[in-house]
Length: 212
View 1 (cartoon, helix red, strand yellow):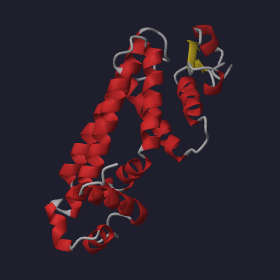
View 2 (view 1 turned 90 degrees about the vertical axis):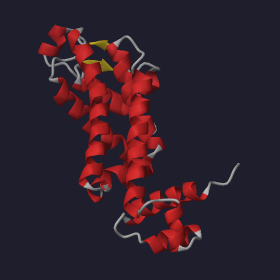
View 3 (view 1 turned 120 degrees about the vertical axis):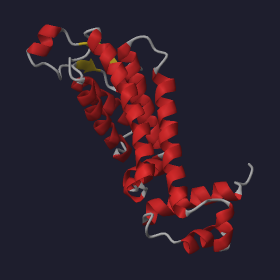
View 4 (view 1 turned 30 degrees about the vertical axis):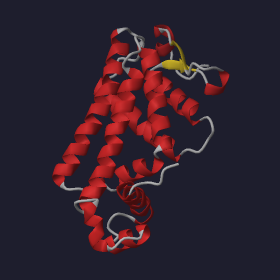
């Protein structure tokens, strides 16, 4: 396996230190020492500590957006699209836990312009989900909730997945999302399909959202 380049090593070490100690608590000298460089040599691989933080967060948010779109856009049925979105969101964040934590904790450390850029990427992620929900509502498969409100609620729910260490975390959170949208959910361990047939209208009106 090839050794990482100095730039890759800097990004890797910066990610770990920023998450472990916080962005403000990490000095340029600590960064340089951790990768065996002189402080002045860092500027051969970054513009500033601030720009390095932004690059780490922006790359994570852009890669998450690409993953969500790639995994959910070419599926015709909205229930399967929602399943794919939920699975992709959870799997990506579990695989990039440090990037996720950094993006959530250190957004405040970015400049206003940098924060605006990150929020634009997050808005596109949310719109990807809203499009799925709008399709499902139009086909009477999901509860007729405002897509913006439902998308915010689902994404807030999925944020909890990275802090959950259960082996069936995808199944658990898929059930939660399915129940929120008025569908009957199947635990992941009972089959490969996490969402099953949507509840009939009379079942919804009787309040049987959690019937298995």
